[in-house]
Image (cartoon, rainbow, N blue to C red; front, side, top):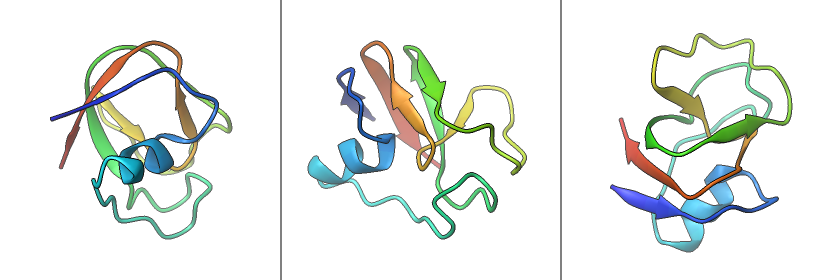
Length: 74
């Protein structure tokens, strides 16, 4: 589990600075390859994803952390 501080950068970038590698393909919310579980905190989508996102999941390519977040890779 990784803690992310609020930022204007996409979640995947914040995760990568902590050494957490998240698969990603499209970078725009189409494929869902970058899906992670949001354990706590609040994120905001820069663009609405087209990929299926289940309850408690977020796409790291098109979200930013609004509050401190705890993330778990799937």
